[in-house]
Length: 464
Image (cartoon, rainbow, N blue to C red; front, side, top):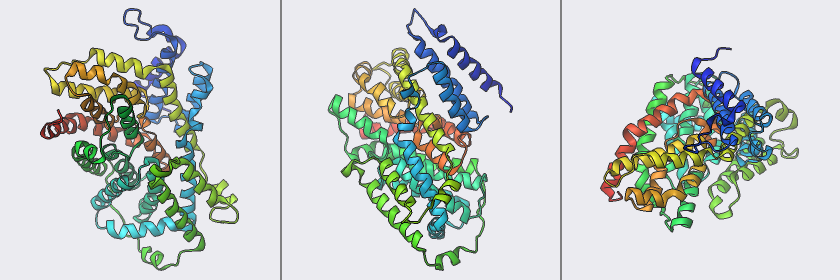
């Protein structure tokens, strides 16, 4: 096993902080006031470094995280293992069962063959079609996790339909296109991602500001949603070039009558989709809806997935990875890294009423940087209470500062920041490092092009 020098430096720095957490204590600045911060930073460096490089299997990185966190008493067990109580983990479990059912019954192939008739012709049409399908789904289905669980089995069947084998550029490209297409632009659609609703909820409770669906969409979607979706298509074509193959058996599959099990699965999926799309009415988590659907498919009398198939086909590794990523976010939050970094960024960035564009970039950068040491839903929790101070320093209205948060939040730097991305990659069996460079370039393009262009758009709208 080969370790690159940058990874070795991260592991060395992380190990040093775990062993000597008070080394980061700075009396003058009070930057690291206790050992919990040092230990949390050290464990984060080690875990993120291993996830990013993929030098060891991802499930093993997650298990190493659990071991180090408990051995060095970085955080209480309920924080370290919080991922096992999370809705994301149980949604992954439900997704794994649904994926098995779609393969066993052949329903995935049938849906893929129907979808393929509209996407065949070129690799460009295939990739752009998957991005647009994911984006369209974000308008009708509020849960990113639910969209992922629905999309991934169909995407894998579509990859098989066009002859893309496991590990091929085409298969990875389709998965990345569907995943990023339904997740990244969804930051600009009000109910489509959890963090959107957290920000709006906090804005309403603390500042009496509650943007309407159309207002939110107008401010963010044209540049940071639609145009960024176009860049996602271009980046997928660049990173994962391939050519679809003609599969002659699709017509046979289309003529075959669906089996009883496939019809049962189709009915269950339609019910799940209806419940996921209406969670704003019944307020039941998408995870529990997905889990209930999975349990129903496993019931002996239903017969879609029997016990032998479940034991043979289920892959438990993704569950450990998701639990590890969410546990890492919990440890970082427990250590207080997000609050410390957010506060010091605000104190040291060049905020001045005379430089509105620099202020705009700075607020977006604060949100993006805070996301490095907390999960996406944690960003509003750190920054929203500071909105009044930022507004006073910059001369922006509190509502403008609140919306600038979303500009930064939508520019993620690492996959681990967004559990839906991790869930999608694990369900599809795609390594995290496969999308690492693409997401970094997407974030860089955002700060060089999209975020400045969005400022001009806001000026045109009279928002800044």
